[in-house]
Structure formats: structure tokens, C-alpha cells
Length: 102
Image (cartoon, rainbow, N blue to C red; front, side, top):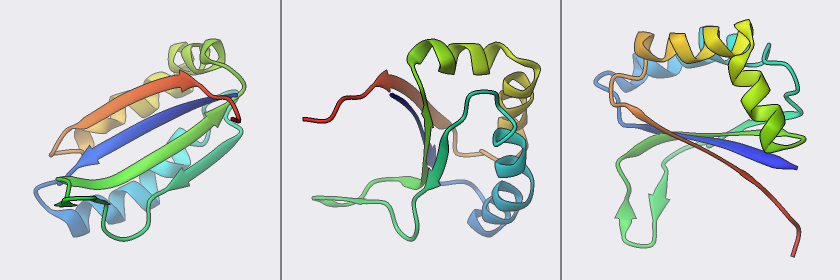
């Protein structure tokens, strides 16, 4: 399995971010081919030292890193990536990696 993790930094208008993300971006991203599971953080994103500057974390599961890359290359993936400027005013860090159970 592989995970795509997106850490959205605190936006200019958190309430507007939340509305747009829920109503528009999630349905758009869920169309990406190969997506197995889509989870988002709930509530504050904190670290051991307190606030992190992150507003929301999304974790998308795929079968492999190759499947993530194929999803990004698809029209649906390009639409999801192209949508980021419409709501992610604080920026976002995107990471993906293979996972294993230890």
C-alpha cells in the first residue's frame, strides 16, 4: 500500500477553506483513479510542542506509489491539483510513500 499525505497550512479564511474543501475539493479528489481510502484530520492539528501551523491533514490510500503517480497524471488528478489555488491560501505540502505494517 501507499499513502498520499497533504498537509494544508493555515489558510487566510479557515471557515471558507473548510466549506470549499468539503463541498468541492473532496468530491473532486475522490474521482482520482486507484484511490482506496480518503481520510482527513478532525479538529486541531497539534504536535508535542503545541500548534503546528497546519489546518488540515488529508491521507489518501492507494495500492502503490506508481498508482499515486498514475492518479496525478490522470485528468482527474490534474483537476484536483489544479483546484488547490482555489482554496489553499496558506499553501500545502504534498508527500507520498510506500507503507508497511511493522
